[in-house]
Each structure stands twice: as C-alpha cells, then as structure tokens.
Image 1 (tube, rainbow, N blue to C red):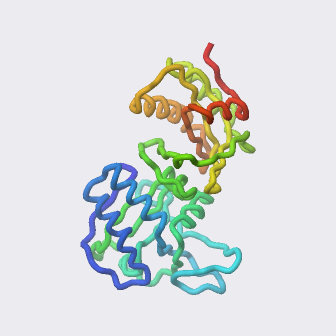
Image 2 (image 1 turned 180 degrees about the vertical axis):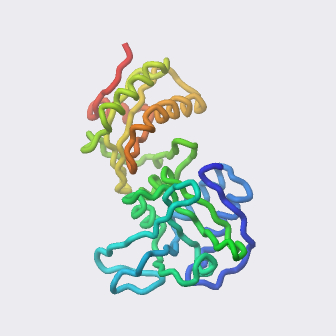
Image 3 (image 1 turned 120 degrees about the vertical axis):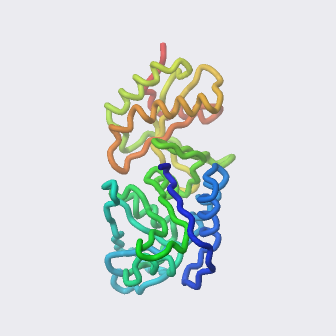
Amino acid sequence: MGLFDFLLGRKKSPNAEVANPSLVNAMHELALSDNQENRKKFYQTILGSMLLVPVPEVPKGLGPGMQTTQGDVQLQLTGMLDRNNVRVTTAFTDAEALRNWDPNTPYLGLKAQELFRFAMGTDIQAIVMNPFDPIRKMIRPGGRVMRAEIDLLARGLVPSRVGPRSTQFQLKANEMVAIGLPAKPPSPVVETLLCACAATLPEVSELFLFQMATQAGTSHTVIGVGLNAVVSPVRGDEIVNGMSTSIQRELVPGQSLDFIFLRGSMADQVRKLGKQIFRKA
C-alpha cells in the first residue's frame, strides 16, 4: 500500500456547504491513475481547498461550518488509531461525505493548509480523506495524506515525488531564499550517520548544514550536498534516498530534514553561511 491508498466512490453532485468539485475530481483521477501528473494536480488543488474537519467540540464563540476567526482560536483535532495502530485524523471534501461517516459529529470548515499546520503540531501521522461508515456505501473518493506530505503541504509546497521514506519538492524559479544556521540543528548522531553514508558515495564531496527560509515564509533545515561529478536524476534520487534512509530512525516525531544539491550561486552562499559537516579528502 502506497502513501496514497485512494478508493473510488460513485460520482454524485453534492448539495453541501463545501462542494469541492475540483478536489473531488482530482481525487477521482488519482484513484484511476496514480501518476506524477495526477499527484501534482491533487496537491495543488487541495492547497486551494476548504475542508470539513471533525472536532471533539466546536470552540466557544464559533458555530459549525465554515469559519472566519477573529484572533487566535484553540483547536483540537479528533485523533484515532487505525487498524495498524497509526494515529490519524479525518477530513472531508463536503458535508454530505462527512454525514456518510457520522451524521452527528461536530465539525469546522478549515483551509486545507491550516489543517496541515495544525496536524504538524500533533502526533498525527496521516489525514484520512472521506472515510465512510462500513454500513453505508461510499459516495466520494478517499485516501490518505501521509505525514511527509503534510509537512510540505503545511508550508505551501507541492511534493514533486513521493517515496516510502521521503518526498521531493522543487523551489520556484528565481525564488529568493535566506540562508543561515539552524536554531535547532539535528543531533550529533544524525550528523555522524550522514557523514558515514556520504563517505560511501563516490560522487559526494561535501555536506553542509543550514537553515533556508523562502519568500512564502516557510523555513527548512537543510543538508546541502556537494558533488564532484554530474549525476543523472535517477542517481541523484539514489543518493538522497540513501542519506535520508540512514537517519530515519534518529529523527524525532515532527522533525524533518531536507536535502538539496549545491549548484551555482546558491552553493557559494551555503558554503559561506552554512556549517560544513563533511568533506571528502
């Protein structure tokens, strides 16, 4: 089972507060054909969508349905364990889909990116989209957005490739970024594992640790990878997957570490402002 375990539901025009026809269609197309183009369409569509989110209780001063909050609001997501003991929460494309799961649960309408941001502050590992009560028929396509995807989507980033242990994304063309040292760097054990892995990769000449902030306001702790040879996209994937796999067991819940190959002017800035943690003799 992959990161997206989408199921097909019957197509039906919803008469609900949030019809979300574009999102429903994107989910349906992804269920029919799980490819890079359909994944990208789904990610882009959900980032612009409003979702219905079950909550244990509606915060004081708010009513069910779509909200425009004034000031800070304390929100508690409804968490549960799935059959594999993975902690998940649920979200729905529209009210009819939600009622097909539980007609009596309290809920709020949230922008999808806000939901992802809330989820990143919890131990939730996946958001289950459009689950349904087994005694009823499925009426919408559904699936799961996994923790690695939630991390990027919470920052407004569209994953370009999703694997079992990592995701990839691409910065926008000509995007300005700020580079510095991370306030909360990864542990010394993580650095040691990265250096040990880099030593076994003949194309990797150096590693730099730095913090990168984008124009969109997102911030990433990054490992810059210097190469001594031109590598193919496939080999680049192998290098990043090898390093990311080597540190998975040492990352604490909610912690992420991005990788970027050092090229051009950005490489000069990273070498100047980042921290070198590895250099091959």
